[in-house]
Image (cartoon, rainbow, N blue to C red; front, side, top):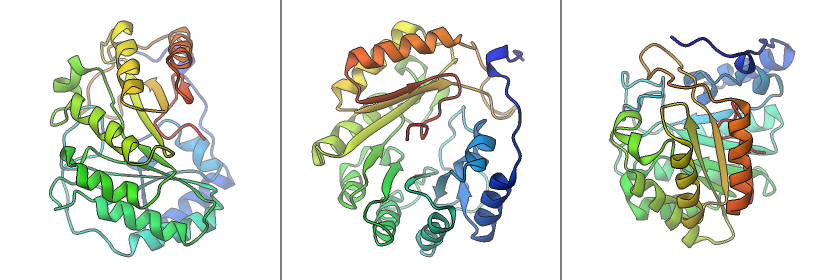
Length: 277
């Protein structure tokens, strides 16, 4: 196992804000990707009463090799009360910006698109000025399901490209690079004024030229916002890190993002897909 370089070492911050956030989420029986995917930023975000909500359960129908959310457990129907519990959590946490993502639910007829839409509409009833981002799976490329989510009116429609096309078979089996690009392209075409966003991880063995190519593919697909962060192995069942990129590499990615015309970007070792505020 590779040892973390100095720029990836950080202190653990445990304070009242973190404990309050944990208590609110636990009391409302809400999942977060921060906890389920073992995000390295959890201490910092929770201390600031921020999180990314994880809907549709805690069991995934895909087997992406970078993710610690497993495929074991119950695949029950969508919990119709979940959007209301998230609404209550948003109130208690005092959030002005909400990020909602999900496990992939290929077992459902609409792959969970209707549940995403319900969450957006119910949150809109709380505050029309609330900034809402949805980070969705690929819906198996079904455009009508993309339409369901976009029609609910999120401010940001996000779908992560995750890695370079050469590594999809290893990193993201069951997904398809061109299909993911089409999800972003189609969503942008439905509502030109809506921001589209995607994120990727580095450290799987990709080249910088491949990263550059993906960035330009995303811009060509109408992607407005990009995030690039260092892959960190969440548990021993996931892929090993092939390379810890130096911070200077992320500075180069930021320059490329600016040159490519992204409206917003965040490229750093600890950047994660819901990082930009």
